[in-house]
Image (tube, rainbow, N blue to C red):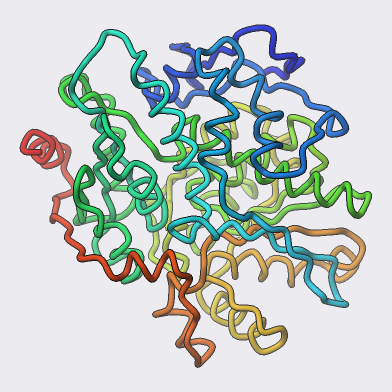
Length: 447
């Protein structure tokens, strides 16, 4: 991927990471996965001078930062409305009063389903709804959004598209591998949303979605589109909150922030890496993973070896073959450069429990298991590094979504945010599905 000028005057093209296809922004939104199986990336990442961004709100920064990505698209005039529609909840950067470290937490869990996935899902839904009427050839069938989820994505996508005319959503999640409250969020919608509980792992769910897209008959029969982080429309708004946090810190503290990002399918981390590549004031980027070690092992050995996922307390990160590794290797094809630019650290379940308990006892902070991996990495940096460099940890989900884990560790109830409490009052229903493409095809035919 080459870096561009970002002047927004030339229409942005989106290319497959595998080199076989290109499209425009709307094509990337609606296709999700390229026909050759690759992921869409912008032809060039625009370079942006941080001093040129005048806005301070997340939605305002989004309009300025994403304008080059919308260049030449009929959605360009809609960009401000899309940003205001999608990014209408708080995303605070909160500095921590600790003497042993310079640290802040970027709270990404104040959206409707209490997880960072709300940002990308709502932006994608807002953009697709505005683009759908102009899609040619005209087709009166609803667009079918298929989403594989290890916990949070499916709920966020279901919420974002629920009752939006012209769309239906199929949520695929692994049986027994999400928290009870996550499962409820994934299956409480009805109307134009159906939930499928797959007899397999998240990787099986993801393989089903990819298989449906690459099967021409299935894809054509159901007007398929994707809302996982494989969709460029999910990744672009996630770039924004990393950029915004870095700008807020840079303006207030006058220094470049370093980021620790919990990583599963690698979309959240990829967005942070893109933000830095575009010129935002971001220094080191460390990915915290759970016991699924594909990413840290790759950085240690230079051998990319995806594997079956392992169940952990940080279930939304239980990914053995993260899709967005393809985007990372496309951006940084030279391994030495990649390893210099990105670090990764695995965190085992025992350490997750320890971190949740320790930070609650020391500071009264309550983390979800995924966020806890980030703070474990922070606490295990060399003391001089923790003290001398400013760090931002991305908090990915509200701990109340993982009450079955967190409350057992801290010994007290976790307050439930109102948006989550309202969802938990709704009835829930999920359909069993074998981890076979023909089973998914039959379920779609019967819909």
